[in-house]
Image (cartoon, rainbow, N blue to C red; front, side, top):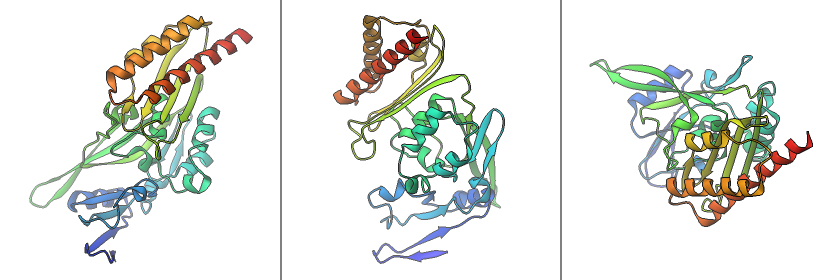
Amino acid sequence: MSENNSSGVGVATIYSPKSTNELIGILAKEKNTVIFGGGTYLMSRKSFYPHPDLRNVVLTSSVPELCRVYHSESYIEAGCAVTLQQLLNTGAYILSRPLDKALNALGSSMLRSQMTLGGALCTRDTVFSLPCYLSAINAEVEIKIFSIKGKGKRVSTRSRWYSITKLYSVEGKLEIPENSVMTRIRIPSQEGLRQIYKTLGSPMSDPESAVVFALSYKDGKTMTEASMRLALPKAGFFASTDFDTFLSGFSFPLSIEKIKKISEVLVANIEATLPDATRIQLERAKRQLQTVLFEINTRYLQH
């Protein structure tokens, strides 16, 4: 279908495909086309629509298989057009209580009912809370990469699963190919994991000072299998395997001096990898890690 606008930029076409294959066919053959999920991010962008370059729009909400949620004993799998609220309503058997609470805090129920998982993960220029949280528990996404072959312009597609951590550059830029589409998100069971999630400040309205913090690990006298992620909007995405290994070797309780030293190492690592991090972001990241380690200390001493 087509929709006219009065801005003088012409006519844009809005596509409502009924299958993933039809969606990919449109993306492969139509130039200057943008994928539209719930619109909570795109519609807040300056000059998204009407756009002077006349971008066509493809809706994911019209594709049934992208709106489904599937459960297994070890993971929950959701289509990219599944809303955050839909995931929360159906994912109780897999989502941990800390993750459920953190996702519920990402916005009002109205916003969560509009925000799609694919849209929240596919922000091109920055990493927000959802990808940071899911990255810490090793969630994965399916990416379908497409190309046109032969004189008949046959569309060829191949699928690949990516760790969410691998979707983004250190600078926080989405790195999946332009000729691709995200189709499914797989969130593993978090049984046996301790998790801490925190969004400090507002990533949308104050990206220069906001910090998204996520940490998962296996509990015990020694922290093991630690996975810590930090999203610093505008500055980048901190996902260091070296720092995860560094965290994983510590035994509790930790001395105050050791906690301070660990947090200083974190700041040094952030400064080395994310040079655009502001002083307030560094301080927030440092204090949040200190708070978490003190809380782990307290819980250990109470047992």
